[in-house]
Length: 352
Image: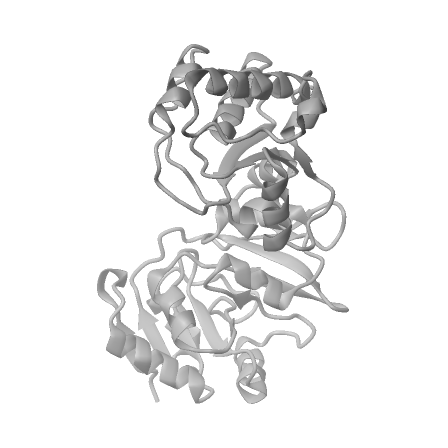
């Protein structure tokens, strides 16, 4: 009996087709699906009979586990513990996309990936169980780049097949093992090893203020200028605000003060801080104690890499270690704030 096929034109998400696919999976069925890399087979990872059948169809050794796919980056914490900072750097850069990471899960390991395919991402939202998604081929054979190749060996052995046309990449995901102190590449696929190493090795510095419209922008721009002058490309500088407001332009005073330094931030728009920003950052500099408190609320397990920026300024600290918000204050207040931030940046550039 041939496997029924559902066509998804231009990878558009049709609700009826989505629900039909979810229904097959819920009943323990196996479904061939397109991803951006190669075609895969999805199955309910909690259904033992379905998983056993998947092993049999693929002729895969039982000691070789399948990768779990997720629809949101945050879900990695549901499947693993003691996640290293390198994992957050990699998923922020490459997810959704052709990257599989291996992490620790109690006394075992788990492979996780967030595929870059609209139908598959929506399918994961539709079902309420985690999905395994190995490539749709018999083990040791070449992974299929279109449905015709997938059905060559699997027609009649799976319950449904989704035809999304040729895959956009056509190369398997790169598999990175992050269970040891030093990462290792288990399979070099669509992302070369050099790119993986570059992302892991690059230090991330995060500046945090309230609205991300003045203080943290000043610090980000000034540090980037110093790094450029030193010809350093091993540091990424970002900024955000605890007010969680996106899309606000910098204050006019901030734009003007940075313009005098030869820096144009007129096209910048504010970003609200997120747990992922915090977890991927090597060093975090905040303007006030309340910002440090908010960071620890968002990520209670945060380690000792959060500092008050003013601690690094050559300023009399008798006035306190906070750098007060200049919003609504006179230009002279802005200038003093700018001076303090610039002093601190001049010193921290030598420790990162």
